[in-house]
Length: 489
Image (tube, rainbow, N blue to C red):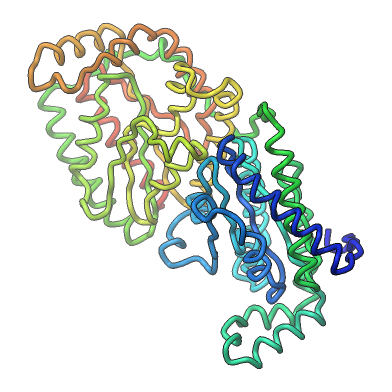
């Protein structure tokens, strides 16, 4: 893109001033419409060191209401961020619906810099590009406006600006080692940037190249491009993203109705196996901590299937400093106002730690689907988005273990009745549980489709036959131990 970029002729100063005043007023007015229409807007600024991104951004946003606009300066990832998946630090910063976030540097800067300095291999770089394209497409498909700017200057202009900054005691701190390295290896960097821009220039998230030699002209280019992009997004009243074909290898799974539920253990067998397996898992917890392997255990299942008791026996084997249980309820307003996976990205463990999810991101294709909390396009699209999310976890090195806790309808009724008739257990049963039971057949259809479409080879579903809770607990422990051992082998 950079090689083919034809610079627009810069207008005279008087025309720039007139157009800029008009564009600024338009942008300020659009902010109100963005808030009213609950449009989330993410603007990223990348480009050459000393190209003036910061100073241009300051002028572009000066008339915006700071209550609904935020600027994130994203330097090199911190040690804490490096313990999380690639793109974690960007995903957790995406704006709420109705607000604008500006990223001063983004995933482009991190990815290309690491590649240019040979900190990542060609293969790793290509995988990062794939992850970035997924991330950007998912944002767009979920209603985000993503506007990407690359600030371009010549090698000569960059050197001139670096020298000017270095010669002033008040500004020399703004010149980093990579800025100087970049200028010294300008042609190599330009080739890499050109390739990156071409690879990630998607219809839903195109690049805008800013001729940044003249600051006022750069401000006008960015402001007018941003105004135009927002105008287009605001005029789009319907949002149905295309449904992508699954490209992940799937593991064939049985239908829920075909799973035998007669498996059981005696009390003596249960106590012996529980103690032995908990000791084994405790030892493995130490090993994953030293190996920096993250473990994510995801529980879904029928109401009263025994998820809580199952989780309790897993947690009892773990060092409390190295694990966390995340009970997932209905999303809070600030969670509902973002991409539905945002609240799960925020709850991922650090490497070497374990997070147990009591209900998960699969709510999108179960309760949200059946209760009408999202559109048909949303939940149909979610199968692929979830597979991509879990693939990102795999690439990070996480052990992801997904359990569906299965019982039959009669067992659920028996447990509901016991809860309702036992005072100390009544808190466990709600009117919503009874309403969901009436939709058993609809839920079974949705769960069968969920398991069929998201049981990938790298993140298959494990069915816990839980008519006998003891059997299900032992099977869960065995499965977790087996999966962790595979990762440590």
